[in-house]
Image: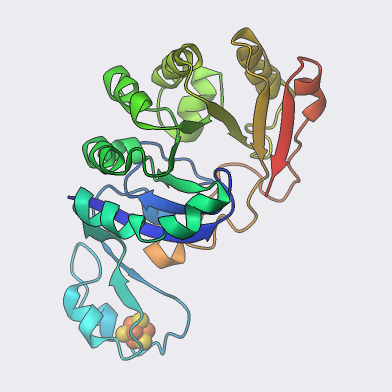
Length: 278
Ligand code: SF4
């Protein structure tokens, strides 16, 4: 069984055409700019929508040491509490996703798996991909943080990947994401040599990933593997919006009041086409 915290139908990003985007729970990284914080924990938990709360306190009274409880879900007069994720078997998820394919496929679209980090639930992901293979265009959006063998096993199951390269400096990567970037850079090499189509992506975080040093280093890395395109994801000013849902406080470890800088000229100088998105 797998945990899915969101399914977005008729999305027009994360791949060509009209797509269904499936967000799998769990991520080994802990970027403070994450705009899907509800996707970071690997397990399921109860969330509370802050909108429309009567502040009656019923849910708080029924909290235990792990947070909100099922009794709290039943007690809320506004129905604001719910489990964050839904549980599916691979066949249940594949059957659900197949229903929209008659509308999606004529548009040249498909299904994109994201997260969280979808490879956190790699067995569930792989089985779902196997069930959908040959039926539509299948893409996975990944941080690249996965054991070699897991990453290699993903490649024959997809039509393409979105591969995040956030920071090339290992010290800064660990500081801002909580993990070593060695597996990511190794998996990037594997991907670049594999022949599987992919789109490199970098989120532009002010003063963190958008520095001249970092973007120049990413441009060098792409040029070394003859990668001709990158998508630069504009800083999401709504990044903090969902933290209250999870009972967390948005605490960016950078100055999010300054604009981010795409520095597209750095990529152009290396013959790399950069697109700034969202
Ligand atoms: S039970 Fe519902 S309405 Fe009452 S405080 Fe909790 S979330 Fe708000």
